[in-house]
Length: 278
Image (cartoon, rainbow, N blue to C red; front, side, top):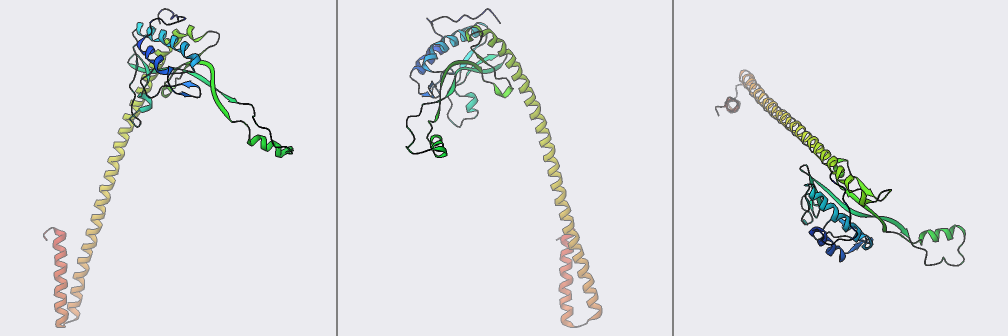
């Protein structure tokens, strides 16, 4: 993974991405005490002002080291809300490793903080009533910067989200470990993409098969319905013919004969329609 990356005590000539981030973050709005830049193209650094210098020095060393190893780093453009893949593509810091873009950044951990009570319970409250008052009027918990810096690979969809924090060795001494893990993540992304592609192909084949089977079933149902309708009309013709024959042999009224002629003609029309001659 190349020679160790040495983080200097100060930056004399910062990388353009780092120089831009320092300028933006110095005036950025703070969230829970962390300077965060979301509306302008900026390196993924979310830390308190006290950690900004250190995070910038490490990021500067990391970017230069990655580029020396042929691994380009970029910050993507800011996309408008609602754009496709907004969260994954907008204002993202990422490095290209074996044809896979891998997101990463620095973040400072937050910790819970509850301030000391500023008001006393009313006099005379005792026992459960006093405890209930104290519970309802307890200071709310807030999140504040912990002073603990994290270097994070942000690729949870491949099941690999690795972070480096200060321990027996500080983050500055673990940058080569970070680079090694980038190749592991790149391979994991490749395998995930392959599995996703295979799943999509299988899903599309199954969907097409199910659609074709559904269409065949619907066509069959329509044919059966048409057949039943035809049989019903043929039965109607047969019944009408039988009725005409029966009445002609049993009754001889003139009015009845005219009506039977009409009924017989009606049966003929149906028969012609069924044969396709109408």
